Image (spheres, rainbow, N blue to C red):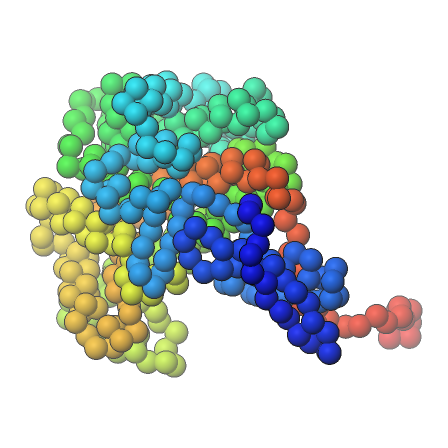
Length: 431
């Protein structure tokens, strides 16, 4: 990191502390408060870390006011239109777009690591049949450290590389197996003649009794979903992966921690919550009732799939996802589905209604991705596992970057203690 060229002065209790400031390549300056406690016996209070940079990163940049998302400097709209998920994986992992030869080699490496250790199949059978696929994924990914001992040494660059490739390659297989297990169908092995998205759809929807052809429109939509969710800066699950990794935990444990965090309905479960909301509304004629509830400050009901904590004007991923949604629905001829009718009407209202426009409650990426996944035939229980599969490369890239960062140390947030002050123990007979 270059030496800071500016400082900020913090004044309190007749004391002043000079704090260095760092300028990023893009975005606002950051005040370096690492020595604040040592210099002034104070620290900062920032619930949710909304104004705190926990690390330096070169991977992803978000400008919420402009509605901008960049992977290594490349706009997400360009990557979703012209690139592929595996090419974005290479970009996120290594910092640059690959040459043709590099892409061929990388694709081959990923493709040849898609199979799981055969004994992992027995591990799946330890779960109840009705287990949520996310519960299964948390367990199986964490258990990979028991099967792949040769890629656990985080201090060995080659082992970190092997672990990264393994997780990117095997996550679709794990997600598909979790799905198959939940519906009582036999596991389907990966095929090396299919691309990444095609292979995942094949493992989810093919059965031994008959041939299955992956439609290229559906494969393209699936690849776009993977690409749009590949990374999203220091969100809750990524920060969880980094925090777990800061202790020196093995990579599989770190990614399992990220999956567990992603499971939350406020994070990865948002598209599932959105579709469940659409089903709760039920029919188009009931939309005004729910719109009124959303506008009522005393009603706890919230419209899921609208607005975004980071993006203040629009979600750049949503426009691309909407195009895919239209393509998929047209391909499948889904026009009479009541849930999708509700979604279309709600989308129209959100883009025109003064309340929604003023509050910037635009349809976000979760709104459209849930529609696409349901149209493809996925149950809502698979929405978050697919998100986890997509985000794996982002987690792995962030984890690798953290391991190589010489400034990084084990995460240990402070707290603002508001409990009882020191007091003496009272014997139970005198209380």
